[in-house]
Length: 193
Ligand SMILES: [Zn+2]
Image (tube, rainbow, N blue to C red; front, side, top):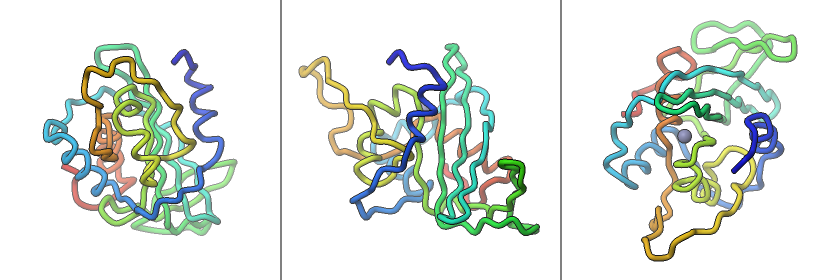
């Protein structure tokens, strides 16, 4: 996986895949699946500093793509995080409470704050845990942001598969990014955990 950060960011955003799956996900629902996958994931350790890179508003499709970065605590790795919310009212008109403002392409947009347990979401993280544990199942179940994940060949067949029940979910960066977005007032609703 010798792909540079910028190459990764460019590749995964290239297009939205056409999802056959009917499933619809909220952050809350994906978190519940994450715990169903493993109870140990109920409380993730902190994942280092989170930084908002940008918010891309798509007025026509009522979608806001939130791009964040997470800086590793123990390693120098910087992970690219994408959380897209769907079905949001987005307008260039000045709005009040319940909306947040972003600048994009020289214009100001007001985006209705997504609710953690109500608004539809797709997610992606560039870390290995997300890739090997969840990416494919998130893709198959309509919960992955961006392009289909690259396929990989399992090196061993002696160990059981990582996610035999094919459960979609969130890595710790996605959970911590969600908590960060709530703390900063970009999203509303009950806490994830
Ligand atoms: Zn991650």
